[in-house]
Image (cartoon, rainbow, N blue to C red; front, side, top):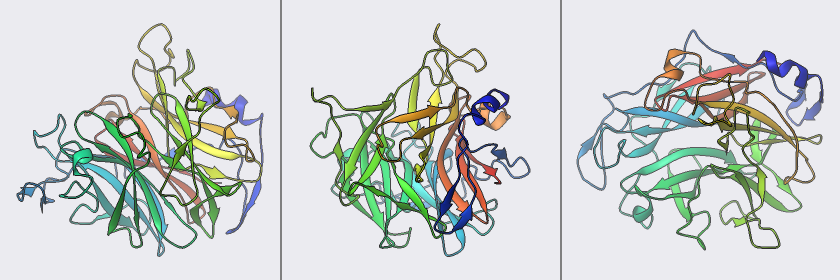
Length: 360
């Protein structure tokens, strides 16, 4: 974005990654949309699977695909993406999480069945009929994958945790905040560090950190990546990392993007913002449009934001980003370091999936 050029000059930093010397500056720009292949994933009615709750065949990704997590494993990029069927059980179909893999980050092979879905288990009351949504995935130091996802029963969204050793078989661990089962919660992005080419969950002061929420962005900590505790102020109110800004692209709400990346100089945090539709809106974007921004957080105090871009670096411009289930949406959730580049995966108009790449 042209409006970001001045911000780029304000705070230029580099650090050493354990995978080797990688020069990175904040903000990390530009990201180039891969127009030759985008959108890289689309709805596919040919994918049929037996739903364990109804016992009937379901075209599990016939309606929409969106909002992918991304990880690197065995020399490939793997996407875990939200897929909606075309049933009438939920307002827009039931959501499940599918799996796709790629050797180049651009062309993907889709696993024939979803890998996380509502079933006859302890989480069914939270997950049915709306489904499971919007995964974000990190790796732990022991090689385990940890997923945050949203369970939606059709009325209330609840942030949940699952884990896996192979990306295909997932163990559900239940609510991220089990002491608050009636609280609306979603969009958990766990702090990571680039280690040997992979984004691995990062401890600060002996704890893991997670940013979550879809109005303001709040903070939670954990000692094991499974059980999480909301950070609160002296009055008991959840501590907010950041909130909406009048007359900016994030004037209506802010929501975490991919897992943020810790460095000794700062935490690189990609997040999503929604434009207001009233007098507080950001004029360059349509009302209610979603764009993608960046923040820079104190590496020693993950509750303190040092910098935020004044303008989004990814906005809806292509027809598949402007028209779909929800118009005017670019929503980032997946980030990996692969073949010497940053690959950013994002949902478009809540209907398809695209990729943008930054080459240092």
